[in-house]
Image 1 (spheres, rainbow, N blue to C red):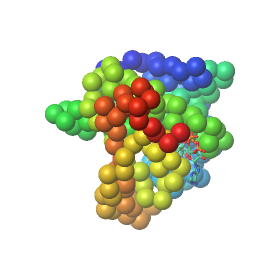
Image 2 (cartoon, rainbow, N blue to C red; image 1 turned 60 degrees about the horizontal axis):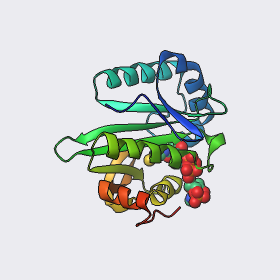
Image 3 (cartoon, helix red, strand yellow; image 1 turned 45 degrees about the vertical axis):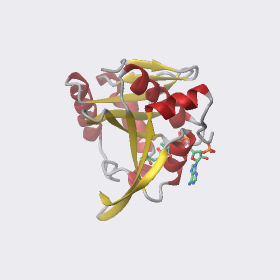
Image 4 (cartoon, protein in one colour; image 1 turned 90 degrees about the horizontal axis):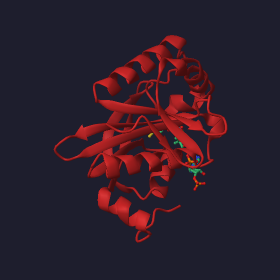
Length: 194
Ligand SMILES: CC(C)(COP(=O)(O)OP(=O)(O)OC[C@H]1O[C@@H](n2cnc3c(N)ncnc32)[C@H](O)[C@@H]1OP(=O)(O)O)[C@@H](O)C(=O)NCCC(=O)NCCS
């Protein structure tokens, strides 16, 4: 199981609790217009009950060792949810995990997502022993592609019509990073494109 709190100089990733209900709800609603394009749960009629259900499910998944969602916080404004980053196992045998993320719209392009994912990658490879981490990114989601590129992920290919968003089937690009690649990037022997 990953640690319930992870930190960098600027941000803290923390496991969700019921106390996060109000700030998560505000962040999700303030960002719905954009999230709605890429994330099936982000319907334009998203309501408070959806937040309550998400937090309940997130706490349960953590307890059952199924999936680990973190609230991203800026250390200089720690009560405000600025985004989420999540990790779950897709293959026990293959030691493969998948990541998901979003950041509130008014905090975009400040490097927050890249920094949060980078910190969680360290946990995934160094503490949890995964061999490979994957991202599934809707084709056309260029900001998310850029996060993957900056972290040194490789685009493996396209999975056709994987995601149903607002009645349309969307292709997913599959990106991956291997443990040895992560370590080489950390040692400065290989580069992400940051
Ligand atoms: C994808 C997302 C999480 C990125 O969060 P973020 O904190 O802004 O990410 P970062 O600042 O670390 O990096 C974003 C990069 O994308 C770039 N970018 C932003 N919009 C872009 C666009 N339309 N086209 C190309 N690049 C874009 C930024 O300039 C930045 O790159 P840079 O550092 O080289 O300048 C955020 O855009 C988001 O929440 N989107 C909606 C939900 C979503 O798509 N989630 C991912 C599903 S796979």
